[in-house]
Length: 115
Length: 110
View 1: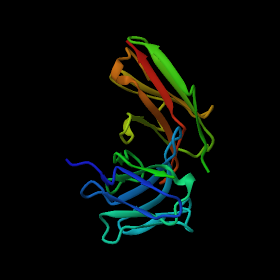
View 2: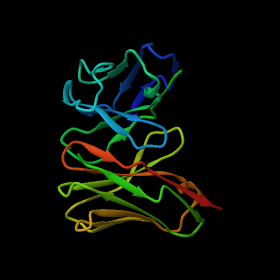
View 3: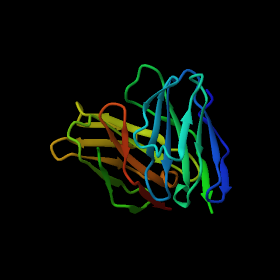
């Protein structure tokens, strides 16, 4: 079974530029998450989707971050304009349908460096 | 919201010895407690989890114990091997949102 796919793996941009990350979850997984992991810290939830609807985006900095999951499968996370403090690894995770808790399957992440 | 803390931040053990990592949580209503292992350059991977109706769970060399009264849970790794070297994250949740701790770096010395 293929895992969660993310791209790009690495991105370097200058502050005030924009960037987009893409995630393809495990086939059939209805719930998709975007996490931000700053160096030396644990993952912090940015947004959770259930199919193509937003369940929780309370910790998403909506002035600069946006995310969508139009067809309930792939998702993109965009940052515009980027700030230095956005340097982090952006992890996408998915969970099978019918599970409110239980295992999250993470991708390998997209590492963003903002100069 | 839920606050999860892990101790110690770094743990070095001799190969073959046991490692114990402790986590505390703040929300007494949390009912699900997983442990994730993250290797360099990879995403976290679930290694064991426990729900609030159970006090202990074991899977081969790893075990998790939960003390709901004290609001803490611990990861136990026995007979450590070099491949156990990684960062370990504990987490707690009530419902959908999982709150992660900051992680413990475990180094197994051959």
